[in-house]
Length: 320
Ligand code: TXA
Ligand code: MG
View (cartoon, rainbow, N blue to C red):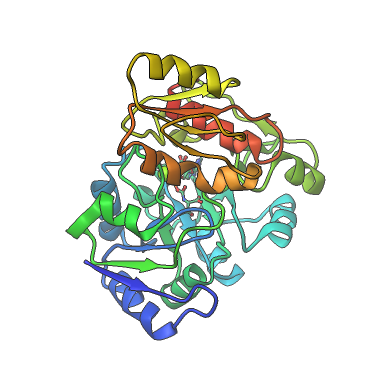
C-alpha cells in the first residue's frame, strides 16, 4: 500500500492522477474530505462498489454517498432537483452537507442499497474535489471498518485496511472530524437523518422548519440502526467527569477523558470549544482505546454542532 502525501492547499494534480487512474480501473482508494476520510470507487461501476462493502464489512442494506465535484456531475446521478435542494446547495456546497434526492437509473442498485433515492454531496476538500473532477462521481463511505470510529487521518485508514487497499491520499488530519449532515428532501417535509457540522438551525434558516429523524425499528437512513463509531473500550457519557474518573480509578482502571476542564484522568484532552471537540472526538477514541480501560466524555448541550457530537457519542455508548 502507498500513502501519498498531498498538499491540501494546492494539491499536486499529478499525484492525484495516480489515484484517479486506479479508480477508473475499478479499484478502491482512500482520500481525505473536510469531514472524515472516504473509501471511494467509481459510482457507476457495480463491481468496484462491491469491493467497498467487502473491505469495510458493511451490511449490504446500508447505502453509500455519491460525491460530485460539479452540478454537471450531480445531474448524472440525481433526477429532478427540488428548489429547497437548490437553495441548500447554493448555500452549503461545496461542504459537509449530504442531500437525499431521487436517483437516476444509471446509479447501480448496490450504491443505494436498492433504494430509489441517492445521497449526494460535494465536498469542499481540495484533494477530494480534484480527484472527483478527474474520475467522475465517486461512491464513498467513511474509510473505517464498519462499526469503528471514522478515520480522521491517513494513519487511521492504514490501521483499518493495511495492505488491502493500494493507495491512501494523505491530506493530513481532517478539519471537521465528524461525518456530514444528511438531509432527506424526497419527503413532503425535509428530515435531518444525521446531524453534522451544518446544523439544524442553519438549515432551517435557509429552507424553513425541518424534522429530526428518530431512531426506530425501520429507520429512513439504514445506517442509523447499526452500532457505530465504537472504540474497543466502553465510552461513558457524563455531566461530571471528575466523579466518573474517581470511581474508575478506585476500581484500579486506567481511564481517559474528554472534558472541558482538567479532570485528573490518566490521559485527557480539554477541548477549547465545541468545534475542537468535534474535530478530535473520533481521533481521541482511536488514541485513547490503545492504553485505557474506559473513555469518559463530558456531555454537551444539544445545540449547534453539539447535536452532532452527542449523536456520535450516544451511538458509541450504545444509547438510543
Ligand atoms: O462526511 C461524510 O458524509 C463521509 C465522507 C467520506 O463524505 N461519508 C460518510 O459515509 O459518512 P457513510 O457511508 O459512513 O455514511 C452515509 C450515511 C449512512 O448513514 C447511510 O445510511 C446514509 O448516509 N444514506 C446513504 N444513502 C442514503 C439514502 N439513499 N437514503 C437515506 N440514507 C442514506
Ligand atoms: Mg460511516
